[in-house]
Length: 304
Image 1 (cartoon, rainbow, N blue to C red):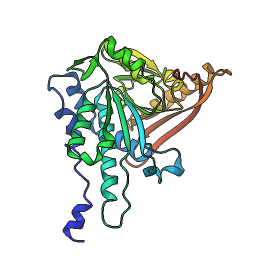
Image 2 (cartoon, one colour):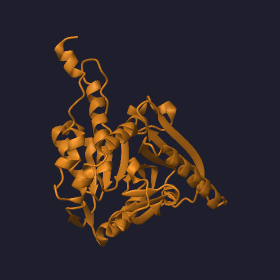
Image 3 (cartoon, one colour):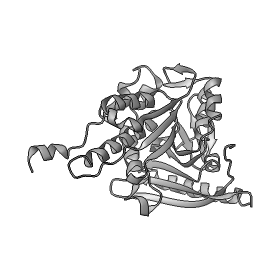
Image 4 (cartoon, rainbow, N blue to C red):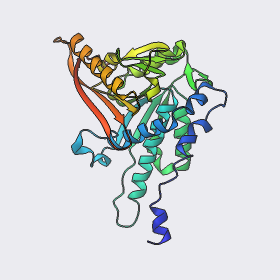
């Protein structure tokens, strides 16, 4: 194989290296800059797994046909973990287009993605990608929330932003979520700052077909201000997937997940509920744990 062909097969440099990208966009003294340096490898592994196994798929049969799916509305909560997911989605799109560029190859359309977020890291990531790859700008549609930007948390704050999110009359394809802490037994997500809770909850409870909650292993604890529950996520979606990475606490996490699903089954056994899917995905180097449970939950659709 000559050098030109070898170079063509190299992984494209999407932006900065993803492990450094979030930190480069942030104020060194901000809360978000500190969080960007925590569990870097875990964030990247979860994001890559999401892109490989869940992005634009609707069951096993469609996983090899997902390039036919060309549009999505995705809501993203503020945070460095969701930004890593966005980075990996953009990298996948870039790779798909490059793999199908050349004489005799059928052009792959750029997925038309509209991102919604009250954070400021994701918009910066989308802007940088759009500048470097203007031919892929269709993947970088963006709705930002109004309000005053908090440079420490890298998000807008205040009643205006909360009202805007709550009044979004949209049904999203995906919700990309994270939290400061998560109590698996009760299914409760926590955040470090009390005054971010209302906005984080508003984002998480927008209606979406599939919601993903990304949590590195150190986040399985009860700490901070409670924001929303797994039952609330299920009531505004069809499927909720909890992503994490293998650790020495796997047995505890799995046991608590089983207790959570048992509790949801007992609490929601009525005619007014609908069957939903709750997944736990634990990523390991050699294999993955993928536990799928059917649970009942009320359905709270947005007003037409």
